[in-house]
Length: 314
Image (cartoon, rainbow, N blue to C red; front, top):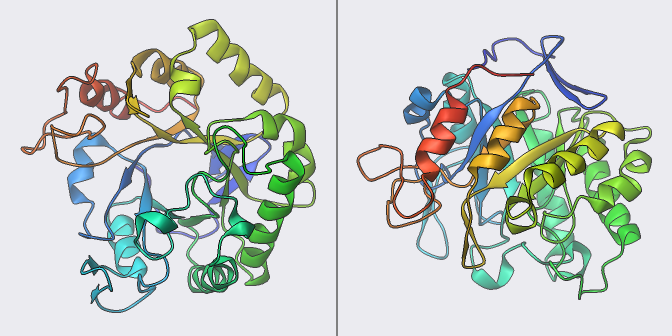
């Protein structure tokens, strides 16, 4: 695990995540600490980074006390979640998954600027950026899984460029120089937009990390194809982070082990979906008793535990 006591430690330099002037590999998990703050139980897994699910961006308090939202859920403040992660030497990625906690306003598959809450969202994003600008171990992801998987929403790479530029500019306008995560197209799984536009997007920007999600469009490929795709991204000098991977997506059960072994050997950073104690959820990393969850999921829990507890390989 990392020590986050000092400031100005985290940077993106070319394609690498840099910590204290050295490249690092980060192994993380997506978590629901907004509903139950506390990441001490991640210590045994040596989790470096937590990508926090924020499903009600509109109402989740930035600071202060826990609230009861309009849907009847108790929500911890972002600062409380971050403080707890920091106490356990963890980086926090704040990721907006939904606007107001309703299924109809989940971000996945939506074209950001076409949503009815777009203008309000940008105001809230600016508030996040201002609050955390001097907390270098807090990274903000601008949107979770934008645009439809089949591109049937008028998607173009130019649209991605326009939307992502606008969101990054909002964060930077608040004098926030922390690392920003920018998602791929096709609900996060398609890296072709990075190959087509990534270099142009990075021009005159700093501390940008592209987020790719590895589900069926990655996990169903053979090792040679996965390595070839990663090699092309490397040759393009694009900084990437696999923000989600898990054995079940869209009703299809997959094996994560070959992909994770390739990622580990290449020194790339990855975050599992999802830190949860529920052996009846195929994607949950843990059983109710806190052991690795291997229930009908191709030994997912043990597979990720093995990766997360190994020596990092930058």
